[in-house]
Image (cartoon, rainbow over all chains, first blue to last red; front, side, top):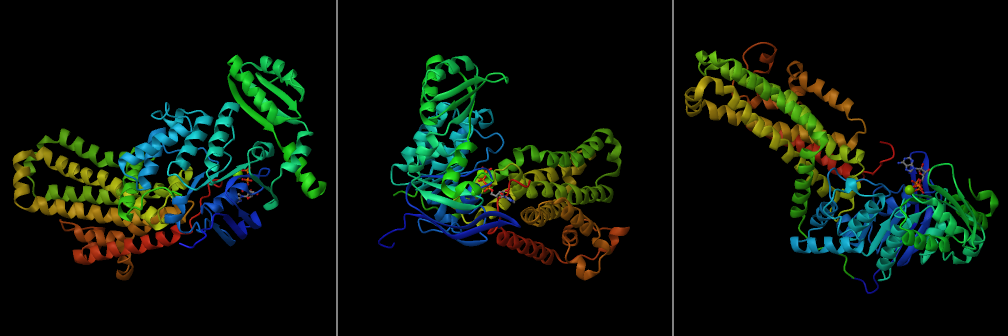
Length: 318
Length: 275
Ligand SMILES: Nc1ncnc2c1ncn2[C@@H]1O[C@H](COP(=O)(O)OP(=O)(O)OP(=O)(O)O)[C@@H](O)[C@H]1O
Ligand SMILES: [Mg+2]
C-alpha cells in the first residue's frame, strides 16, 4: 500500500465510439468522494460514462481508475464498487431475498454474513417486508430500491447509479435520496445520473453537466441555481385525486399554474421553485392519503436553461 | 474502509456461479425446447414398450442393440446437439436479451472465471437432463423384453458395455457441442446461422476426407459406439479412431474453443440497446 491511497474516480482523456456513433468524447475528470450528480439530456453520454466506469464497455481511448484500480481488474475493483444500470431487469422468478443472496454468495461470504448483510441492505432501502416476494410483482419504486440494495449489499466504497430516481413517486424519491446521502456521508462516493438538473443539484456535493458526449461544466453549480429557480418548471402528476393536489398547489406562492389535463387524473403544475413544491407535495399526499402513480418533471426546459447559461444559446437544446 | 467481502478462493466462487446458472438454465422458459427434445425419444420408446409386448420373441440380441444404437444416434444428433445449442447459447445471449448479464460482470471475479462458471453451469444443466434421459431410454428399450432378458443382457457384460459407450459419448458430446455453442453465444449476435452451418458440417462427416473428418465432433463420437455400424451410408464411418484418441480430440478441441471464449470475454461489452 502507498502512503496516500487514491480516493478519486478519474477519467483521463476517455473517448468512446459505438462504431461511428459518438458516446463520449475526450472526457477528463477527477471526482472526489461525496455525492456527485451527472446530468444531461437524453443521449448526452451519461450511461456511456457510467458503463465505461463499470467496465461494461471498453473505452476507445483513454484510461479510467477508481480508487487507483482499473475496471479491467474486476476481482479487486468490484469489492470497492457497486453498480446499478438504468435497466429494470431481473432474472426470472427472483425474489428480493434470492436476488441479494445470490449476489452475496458470489462475493464469497459465509452463510451467516450473507444473511446479515442481506437484511441490513433490505432495511436500508425499506424492503424488509417485501423481501420474500417476487420482484416481478414489485412496483417501479421497489424495483429501484432492490437494485440499490443489490449494489450496496457488499459494502462498497463507490456507488454508481444510473437514473435511480426515474419513475419514483415523491416519497420513494425522498427515501432514495436519503439512502444515497447517508451512503455518501461516510466519505464514500456516490455517482448518480439524471436528466433532471434540480433533482440532483439539490442533493449533490458536485455536479457534472454533460452535453453531446462532452463534459460542459463540473463542480458546484449552486451559483447557477438562481437562474433555474426564476425559470418556472413544469411537473406532471398522475394520481387518484388531482383536485386536492391542485387546490393545495394554488395556495403556494411559487406555483404559477395548476391545471387538470384532459387525460384522466393528470395534473400539470408550473412552479418557480420545484424543490419547495416537491416538499409540499409530499405533505399533501401524506395528509390526504392520495395514491400517486407518477410524477414527471417536464425537465428539459430546466436543463436547457442551464446550458444556455453555461455555453451560450447556440450550444443549448440541440 | 471496508471494501466488502472476504478474500475468497476462485473455485468456490466459480462453483457458486455454476450452480446458479445451471438452475437458471433448467428452470427458465428458455429450457422448454430442451424438455421437448428429451420427450421425443422417451415417448417413442414408451409407445414401443406399451404397444409391442410381442417384441419379446426376439430376445435381446442384435436387433435390440441395433435399435439402441439408432436411439443413441438420434440422441446425439438431435437431442444433445439442439439441447446444447439451446442451453449454451442462452447462457450468454439469453442473459443479454433479458438484460441481466451485467449482474455477472460487476462481481469481484475475473471475466474468465465468470464465463468458466457459466460453461460449467451449462454442462451441469445439460448433463442432468441428458444422462438420466439416456438411462431412461435404455431402460424403456429393454422393458418390453421382460426382466429376465434384461438382467441376462446386463450380466452378460453387453449391457454395461453399451451403457458405458453411450454415456461416455453423451458426456463428450455435451462437452464439445457445449463449448462450441457457448463460444458462438459470446461471439455472434445472430447465432442461428452458425448453428445451421455447424449442423450441416456435422451431418456431412461421412462424406468428408479424413483430415476434415477429424475436425468434426461426430467422427470422434462414433468411436464410442458399442455396437458396430454395419451398413448403409454410415458404413463410411466404420473406421473409427481409438477411444483414447477420440477423447483427446474432443477435450482438446473444446479447450481450444473455450480459450477463444475466455479471450473474447475480456472485451465483451454489454449492449442491451441493439437487441
Ligand atoms: N450500444 C450503442 N450503440 C450505438 N450507439 C449507442 C449505444 N449506446 C449509446 N449509444 C449512443 O451514444 C450516445 C450517448 O448515449 P447514452 O446512452 O450514454 O446517453 P444517456 O445520457 O445515458 O441518455 P439517456 O438519458 O437516454 O439514458 C447516444 O447518441 C446514443 O445513441
Ligand atoms: Mg442513460
